[in-house]
Amino acid sequence: MRANRSGKTRDQLREMVDAELARRGVSESPIAIELGLDAMLAQDSPFGKARFTVASLKKLADIGLGIYKAFHENEEVARLTPEWMEPPARASYAMRPNPYRDSIGVELGPRAEAVLDRVFDVAHSLWKDLALVEVWLSWDPETPTDNSRIAVSIGNEKIGWVEVGKTDSYRVSMDAAAERGELPFLQAGLQRRDQAPRYVVEIPAPKPRNTT
Image (cartoon, rainbow, N blue to C red; front, side, top):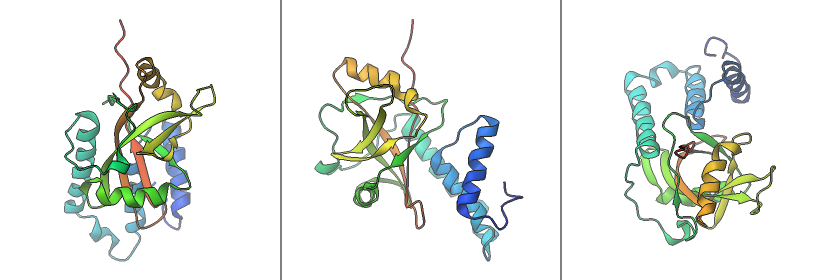
């Protein structure tokens, strides 16, 4: 990818990344992909290589560790959540993340940017333009069918849907919550950017229920 990046636009690089990941049959964190694209593009700019020093890479590692702990170790996140960001009472099923799966992207809706502008100002910041925020999941439409998608919401605002093709990863957790008359809630990683895409949101893949 780096050897063939010269002269490519960000969209072209993203297509190359997606194709290479698909060819290898692997997945990657949406935020990690955007950071990787940033790195490749920055290295072609004046003094670009100097911007990615060992110190810079350490900061990126610290960010990744913070997200990992929050997603996979149930790290307590100290925050004061404004009332408008609180999930509804029914969203009380704590979804446990799967430590062996990469995070999954959220396809943002047309109103998401305005909502996330407000959210980011009060979200728990990990570092600079990365933060954690509590989201909850619901079927869209509410009565699920084979073609239903899973909506991702903050407070009363729907910001988007679980990435196409990943709905089945959450179906067991959605069913488990429904058995209790509840909806799942979990921590999402939120990246704010100076260029498109303006925001990137990712959520952890769920941990499978114990089976006997």
